[in-house]
Image 1 (cartoon, rainbow, N blue to C red):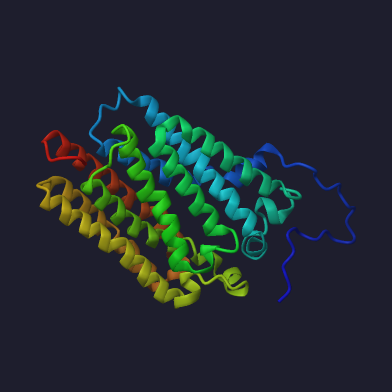
Image 2 (cartoon, rainbow, N blue to C red):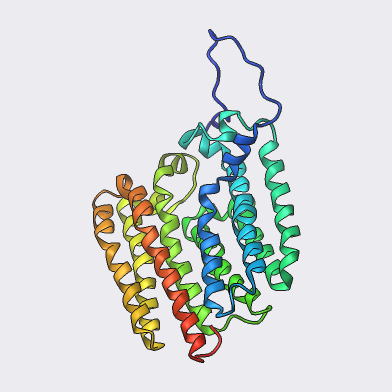
Amino acid sequence: MDTPPLAHTPSLKAPLAAAPTRPALRTVAELLKPITWFPPMWAFACGVVASGQDLQAHWGLLLLGLVLTGPLVCASSQAVNDWFDRHVDAINEPDRPIPSGRMPGRWGLGIAIGWTALSLLWATLMGPWGFAACALAIALSWAYSAPPVRLKQNGWWGNAACALSYEGLAWLTGTAVMLGGAWPGPHAVALALLYSVGAHGIMTLNDFKAMEGDRRLGVASLPVQLGAQGAARVACLFMLVPQVAVAGLLLYWQLPWHASAVLALTLAQWPLMARFLREPVARALHVSAFGVPLFVSGMMVSAWGLRQLQALGGGVA
């Protein structure tokens, strides 16, 4: 199978323009994808809230963590992914910075390595737990994209690595650093893991737009493995069941109002998913745009529930 080109081939009739030797700042920002920074930053904030600690007294840690999880760790993972996905992107999204040629030479790899090093350096400001969590998240991001591991080659493993890093690990890091490095406790661990399972379904939503390139280059995403209908059912199942389980746990912990709110937000996602199941490829981005905000709203409701549990003396969050 021929390897697709990494940049558009100019027309022979058009005058040849000088190839750029370095990317524009706007292109670098596009490579780092600020729009993707929200999920880990939000999960970190949920962990901070769930810790039960005084937010005003720890605003510095909150700021450090938000910068680490979003503009640094998540941004570096995006750069790593774009570099090692450049052949797939040449088919699915040829206008992205690397396949379009706007990110010339090995600049993409250099930025990925540089942002990784900067993330680890910044993490030293957050104590042993913050540094260890950052190192694990960085390791998962490279393992997801880079050979020989390249977890992305299998949708089950790749989505699990992203979901754990973006949601569960970020949540537990937020709680742990606010507690001075103490273990977050069973309540926080349970919710962080459940929301990580839910995020696995969210990651599957993002794979529908890349089905053609993934199939041609042997990337076994869930839509490629299971077909569009099968992957849609799995994505919905992975998103819905953990949220119902979270509502059940909150009710068991004597937090009925928080449980009711999470359940209501979960039920509000069902009409979107019903249409998605009928038209998976056409509706995947629609669920991402309107269903995922309901999902992450439930995360914050749960975090405030754990905070109340702390205030009532219910143990470590």
